[in-house]
Length: 223
Image (cartoon, rainbow, N blue to C red):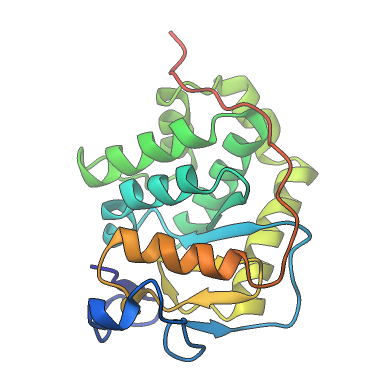
């Protein structure tokens, strides 16, 4: 279930499936089995970071599960971190597009719309103009999108996306990072319930404070 797409080979990596018995609620999760410590640094608040690419079919297939993870932890900040490793020159283009959507409050609807267009409708963006058209289709006003696209805040946000990927050494997607420190071994769980339980365990490890509430998102497309 929890597969990843490798950056260099572009192939699906299948991991060892751990039996549900080993993930019983009363059993501790183990470093090196269920998660890896990728850094000593922690985020200021509880945080779940999803590394993904719009060009990753498995990332698309798991969006419903990632939505459940987000909804299960309202006390944690949920960060989508697109990577540039897939999609050729359109990888960085998609990073800027989602950064604009985040700044304008259209993140959730834009992510759902772009994934659906690409993986169900076959509408694959091949140029900046294509990405603009898709952004407009999701409800983002074209003038606002273009104004934000080359702004310093957007360029800085994309640099942060890349820095996270480099610092944590992300080589495949999707991946889940908890509290900026713990990289979940996604292949060690069999279902979304076990994944949520593992994330809950990791969120509580360092007694970080709850994340403040973010700004409201646009939930419907503009007419």
